[in-house]
Picture 1: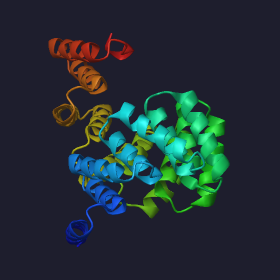
Picture 2: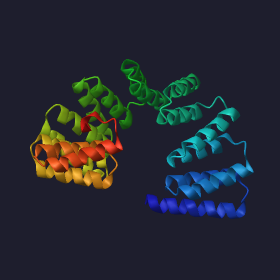
Picture 3: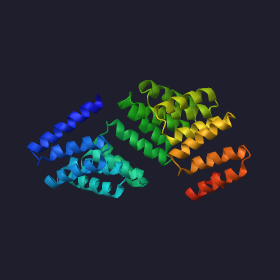
Picture 4: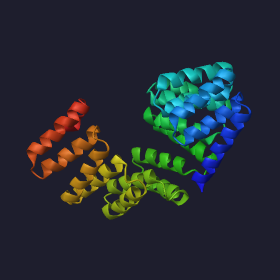
Length: 299
């Protein structure tokens, strides 16, 4: 049904553009739809056409910036956000989006400045508080991060992603019972989120509740069988449970999905060493070090 609605929407945009090919808003909205459909190059074409017609439209610059982030063209995305903020320095959403980009680029101080500007403009946006919380976690300022997550949940208590992020923080703070409570709330709100199941599985594994952890990893893989991290985490659990052949199978799947992940190679190496297949283990450690020379576990 959703796919049908999307096709109908695209047809309407095409008809509208035949009638008025110089309407920047139609081009922009069509670009948004194409971006949602992950047809990046076509979306970019629409945003460029929109900006050619109306180069001073803040929303178009911002939406084009959002697309460029998805396309991992971060420098160009930054340029679009800067233009948008020059045109409208009082738009909280743009400050937040620029903050998200800066955080992704590990320019944390600049990101924090953007989040603060965003919150000065809109103190009641749960997403901004959560994004700022995520940054503070990255900066190891956990108490401040917790404050932001709590503010975010006060504003949007039914947001599964925020509960999950708060749970991740509580794990980091070794407050496992509280973390479990947050993951359970998140899964009640969204039982079809693979990431939350996996995060809860990681916690249960940490608490040595292995059967429950395995159940969560299986749920997670049913929802997203192409996530290398989940396969690796499940492999780690199986290794801990001395189910080495099954663990090896999970590591192999993980490496098929992401052969450039040093952590997976290292974990697979640990398993092979445990199985006394030392030459193969050494090979995995070498690959891990080639991918990440600073990986202490592979030395």
